[in-house]
Length: 321
Image (cartoon, rainbow, N blue to C red; front, side, top):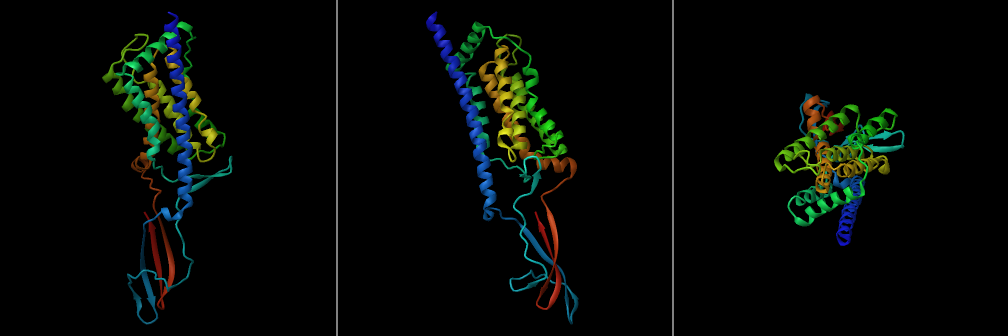
């Protein structure tokens, strides 16, 4: 009996250590991703913008008005200085006095390392005996210590998203305005639900309290981590430590889903992975969804510039796609 209790404590310790390592990995990958993006913006040679130029008309001294297809050449005398289109769009966060990058989000492969690891662990816990034993021993350990149940996990899952709207209401601007961040968050919840709900009915894993067979994956944890990832994206450009402040609430939610005997450890870890993945995908597809719903395309701009070339005056038209 004593040996069995020691094994249970060892399993619980391994479980806590694994969750802590995965969380630290998530934070480390997030910081490295920000560093990579900043370095990419510093090097302008890595941003090749496609610029289409054509002359609308040229006015000659003896020809009158003629059409021309010649581009502004290197030896031309321009009436305005040469201009370079910016590699990114930024706005000023007045609270933190920092520039926030408004360039459409393009996820790196590193963005999918943590959610893939979480989901892989959860799926493996359904079939691998060692991880099954970890689920059982964790449940036994919780029952033995008679940890107090609470319904706070029903509310803590929404704390990170409430922080985003609360901070914006107080004047702490995030990356997106009210409309855009609302579209992004709703999209993340739709994606999360589209992954989690069907899996519950396909896997049909019995909950630890035997209330039903919809245990895998944890929907509460998926919502909590998608909300925490949402907070991270909105404030990572202005204040990194503020941006990760939602993860403790997400971890609290997942932990108490297990303590409340509603989910196995594998369910919780998989739910975290699906939540993070849903938000990453929501930010990725947001420009297309925004354009589809509101016909709002902010990725193009046009400029008309006067010039003088070969004793001809004219206008140069430039458009960025």
